[in-house]
Length: 531
Length: 85
Image (cartoon, rainbow over all chains, first blue to last red):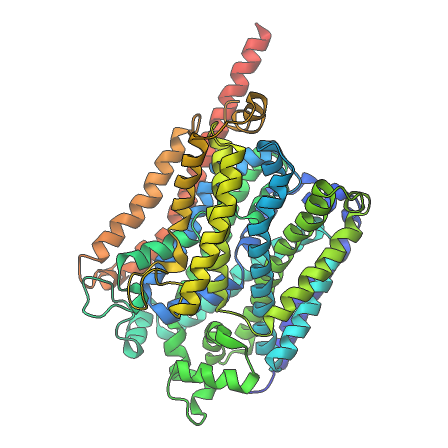
């Protein structure tokens, strides 16, 4: 397969627009407030599109169709769960946190729990999740570079890391907010156009379902009513419920989305941003469901590499591509979405898909790198360890941090530890069960206190990280309950830790000393409606 | 806990989780339910992909925004009336 000039021109056009937005908005990113939170002057439509684009990563664009490809129809519910978590956030955290108006994710923990060391403690799971996400974003960008240029995967990773570095180096949150809003439009367009191509090819929804059944007869099977479920991981109700809840509360409590609530003009704008994020995000996800559903049949019926020696089905085709382009570890399955689009043999479609894919990968890399920049520079070096450098030279400090973060993540990207959606799931569970309860209940529960927050973050970070890694290594998948066995109890990404984390936090807080009444009033009661 | 959380929030949560639970339970009790034809297409595309992923969440987002904006207007009007008095 050769690189197609139309696809290359499409990708170049995307880069030209992104550079133009960066150039146009560069003067707005000269002071610390603009650099970190875009001067709090971003409107709801722009902020909503940027929110959707930042929240949805290559884990969505490549990972979700790949999981539908692997696990079948029941996995559609995971997408319902992800988008359903978005409106929930508008009252749960978006409006209260915009009212509080901090600069960084850890500001709330330090203020609400009355110690600067909360920045360090809350920073640990955030750093774990942040590195995971920047890594998967580089992997995603590399897979799209591979699709565009047909270079070896290692070369694609290096090119991708350089592109992401230059993009973030360009400017802070101002330039990334406006270019990320454009990227939100691009990802929605790409997903919807891809889905329309597939529906048009198979003559609508019924045609697509019939074609899918022709190559995967169990695709629409469910546990308990069908003899064989669509996948072993969908053989119990916990599989479906677990995937639904793995990412569900992420929009309320994940640092890279929470910081975008800070950039909104006011509380009303923060809430309306969520509506627009649902608008763009929901449309994108409908497209991804259709692409994931059609992936196997498209690859097996139409992909040019099906003619290659030894290729008998979609899985063997992906293995063939893994050898052909030297794709690292499990990430070749993430290529199934791109392979499905390649099968339709339309350079125009591939140009849009690659531009949308680059958009979603770069926006997430930028969002997370900004979170890590601010956390490592301003919060830890500056506020915890007393260095004046991040405050006096914020742009220089964040650029140095960008370099450190991207070099480390690029090294991991050469051989990714798992599928991009698995990396994403691990990051979500670790962060949501550890820093999620102190954030959400810190706003909504007067008894939430420092001891509870400290103990919960440390204990839940250790337990969730260990159980995920143990299940992944010892049982072959992070989706089996870590104390069970392969083929035993299905617990996607050890999702139960999110609920255990909330219960554990409440119990610790009930038996420990509450925070001062002034702090509870200022950072809990005053942030709620009617205050 | 969750004191002063607007009631509409709980209604929204009930709608979101109710939708999921209702269709999930039907799916694991009625064989072949996702492929049942409705409006000329397999029903799952409608209740899961189109309504579950998009329409329902747009409705919930509008519901939450509208009710909060109305409540804030009422609070502002009350505050200005008290100021005049």
